[in-house]
Structures are given as structure tokens and as C-alpha cells.
Image (cartoon, rainbow, N blue to C red; front, side):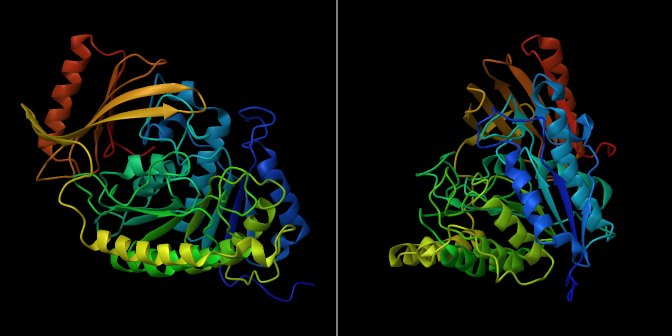
Length: 445
């Protein structure tokens, strides 16, 4: 008989994607969540009053296109499993935003945090950025009563740098993106350094905390207490989202960190996100069932002291003094970067044309799963009236040169006129295979 109940109502949205896998033996396959499902049922999680499992609603192609420029089309780069995974994140958001639950955890796959604004295929096991699709849905359907932009913080605790989420929110001053990850000098995707701190309209809104290999519970919790929480306190978000990657577990085959299931639970208890969305994690039997259980308990405000994964020993989460000292110095520097960001972005430069002043940079993006190389020219109009029109000239072995234009929320008339002029010229010039315009102030879908 249950003798306790959840301190916070928790909704769990579960989708294992039975029909999607990169290959039958690939780390990103359906077993990632099937063992979790067994564990949650075996431990009686859903017998606890206040913890409820919910069915998801599928996302639509139009909802994916609110975030991504999918080339050559949304259907070409996504499957029904991607629609379900993004839809699971949206379902979790609806539960919280409509106050049906206090917290929600979208236990879904495929993951998404390596999917960038422009998508040619799969990179880092990701095609569609589930959290970004969810955030656009939240902004579309749950605006602040006072009309001011909703302030959202995304804290990505996956072991790999969330380069796709960073790319999408790079010039958005109303979204704070924080990524704690294994140092990019030692792990894919090789990015996520402190100087990568945002675009011209959002300097200081991207925060990267590259942790050294063999960071354990103590190091992660120190970074949360001494860097993440102080920054969140100053940013004052309306909503906190955890990109809950679990591949920093000490048994994960793809990385070199030493976090435990109890460490994950303690991290979430400190962070106290409104919504968590599963990202990576490939220790299918030895970690994920226990970590997911710990996260669920933490989100529900319940203790996780009794969780122990089979291979845990005191040595498994022991952290060296060298790592501890490094993290302490790093966290001091990170808070200082948030408070005193640089005057200009870390790469690119300013140019001027008939449509105004622009910040431009060239990017070379490798799709490691699909073996594609994308060449991209990214530009942001330096506008005194809004965050600025964004344009992306892009091509790969799969997609001929194409032109994409992003009108951000609250775009001014100057940027709108520039977008119309540039799109018209691109369509008439015959240089581009595809010309796409995304207006984020258009009607919600």
C-alpha cells in the first residue's frame, strides 16, 4: 500500500519509437526506453498518487517548420517517429502550461539537440530539435498576460554540447541557453566553449560550461550551484527546461564522465525544471532505467536515496582534486561572462549593403550520421528596432544552394521590407533551388 504521494504533480509522456533506428545494433535504438519502461513499472512509479503517465499527440509538419528550414522538405528529413518525439515534448509543455501537472518529463526518442536551424539530414542522431519545437509552441499558445516576451531558460545536461539548440537560440535574447557538457576538445561535436556566448542581439544569452573528462556527481552539482543557479537567478526565467541527456553516466559507452543515477536526481532537484525532455544516454541496461527513475522522483519532489545502478561503487563517482579545482575556476569565469559579455560575437564580422548593416559568419557543418557536408553563410541584420532579420545561404551534397530567411518575433517594418525584397530577388534570380521564409509572428499552428 502506498504511504506517500508526490510533492509536485508529475506527468510522464513516454514514446520509445518502435519503428525508428539508425541500425539494429546502433546505440540509438528502441531498447533505450524499453528497459526504462520495465523499471518504472516494476518500481511502481505510476502507483504513487500524483505521478501520471500521459499519451502524446503527434506534432505536425507545420509545427516543425515553425523552427526549422528543412531541406528539401520537412517530409524528406523527418519520419513519423520524429513527429511523435516532438509531439511528446509539446504534450509535456501543455500539461504544465495548462496546469494539469506541476512538472512533466517527455521520455521520448529520437533525440534532437544537435538539430540546427537549417536541417539537411541527421547529425549526432538528431533530425528535429524537440525542445525548440516545443518552445515555439509555448510562445505561440501561452504568451505572457502583460504582452512581454516569455523568458525561457534551457539547461542542457547532455554530455555532448547542444550545438543545435545553441544555433537555434543564438540570436534570441529572450531564451537563455546553458549547456553543461564534456569539453569539446575531447568529445563530439567539438564545440561549446565559453567564448561562444551568443549572436549580435543576444550576447551573454548562450552559456557554455565545458567540463573536463571524469567529472563526477560533485563536479556537476558544484557547477549547478555556483554557475547555473546564480545565472538563472539573475535571468529570472518564466520557464526552465532541462534537455536531460544521460550519456554522462559513468557506464555510458560514448563519453568519459562519472555521473551516477543519484547524481542525476540531485541535479534535477537543484535545477527544479518545469519540463524535462530526454536527449542522449546509451548505457541501455546499466544506466537509463535507474537515471530516468531518479529524474522522475526528483521532478515529483520525492527522495531518490535508495536508487543504485548495478555497477555502482564508491570509486565509480570519485572525482580527482585536479578536476575539482578546474571546475571551481571555470564556474567563476562563466558567471563573469554572463555578467560581462563581449561587445561582439566570437566569430564573423560586420558588413554593409543596400539593406543595412549585417553580422555575417561562414559555417561548415558535418552531418556525421548521414555523411553530409553543409556550407552555410549566416547573416543577421543589425537592427536598432528589433532583434534583426536572419538569412542563411546553404548547400550540401544532398541539397543545391538554397536561401532561407527568418523574421523573428516582433520583427520591425524595416526588417520585414528587407525580407520581402531579398526573398523576391532570390526567387526571381534563379540561383537557388529553394527559397524559404519563416515569419515567427505568423499565425500559430
